[in-house]
Length: 98
Image 1 (cartoon, helix red, strand yellow):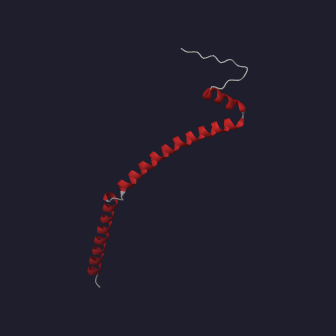
Image 2 (cartoon, one colour):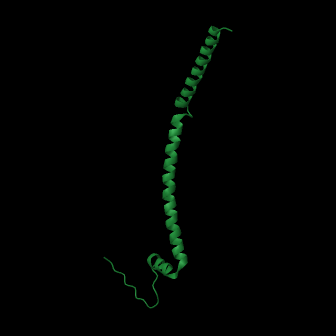
């Protein structure tokens, strides 16, 4: 094998590898599961993270309310007064209409 044949074989190998590389790049940038899909999924992930944070905050507030209700009678009494109109036996209830 001469140097000329060797160089020609190397050129064909480089050409083949270049074509394969170009096809792979086209597949990444243009295909259905390529770069655009990754960007779309990243956007959806960020939206879901925000939604999850809002729900975590809500759950924490509800858990704090549950803990408050379980800890003492004062919070239960306050809840009964505001939501159910609870009054004690020795109290007089005044309803003010504005």
